[in-house]
Length: 322
Image 1 (cartoon, rainbow, N blue to C red):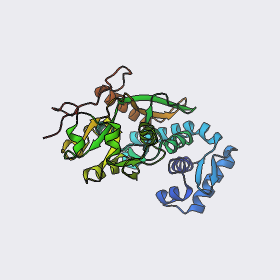
Image 2: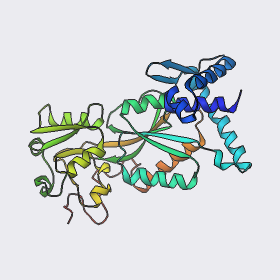
Image 3: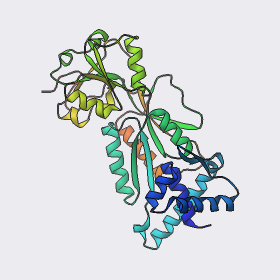
Image 4: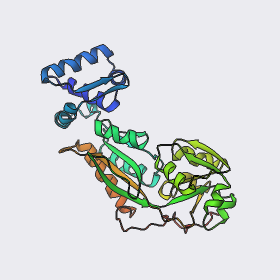
């Protein structure tokens, strides 16, 4: 058994594809596939399930993955002791439905980078079901997903609340809706609506909020980032969790603003998820703890925490930027 074989398995698991792993490792795909098969023969188990859509860890592979990770981390420690830090290129992968949680995600990555200068952090945008599947299969180390009260957590996934907020209507400051202290459903229906695609929690929430009624005109987009950019360009309004808007660069610049939804008391929870396991990679555990620390600083981890939108510095919720 060679260290490279374990590194190759870790790369295939992380990237979900023999081809992508071969490209990253600068190997031919047949050479990588043969190396992995040699390891499988030596261990007597099939580590990967090979499908047309890609390669994922088998059940046996997922059980062995923590041991593989521990071996690789031990090799890293040996290289550090030998002064070969430049050879270490471990990666932590974070799947997120909402890369726009700027007050949380960006400081977390910055703090983690300071403590782990040679560990890469890859942030991947995906839908909730894709994130949870990748967590179960070992493709992601951590996942950021939105939940509504009462949503179930899949078996085998550990879930921790980071932030608790409310849905808000995101508009341009010069929109007629921005002059209101809050927005009614009827007012929202009269505006062009930028909706999240099916598969996102906010798509489900808006469908429920409108009660099956259709807005005057609607767009469909994939994720909060594009939704906010479309709002900034004057294409309409969108509905997002307040923690996706407050503190965002566009909101700080006064390009977009937000208003609560009249009569609505729905809570949106930003959850940090990971696969239940007896042991996890040290870097992934450290990043997990940085997320928790940052969330505590924002006051978002307590279930009894504030449910109203968190105001930007120097501004009260519902006031129009000047």
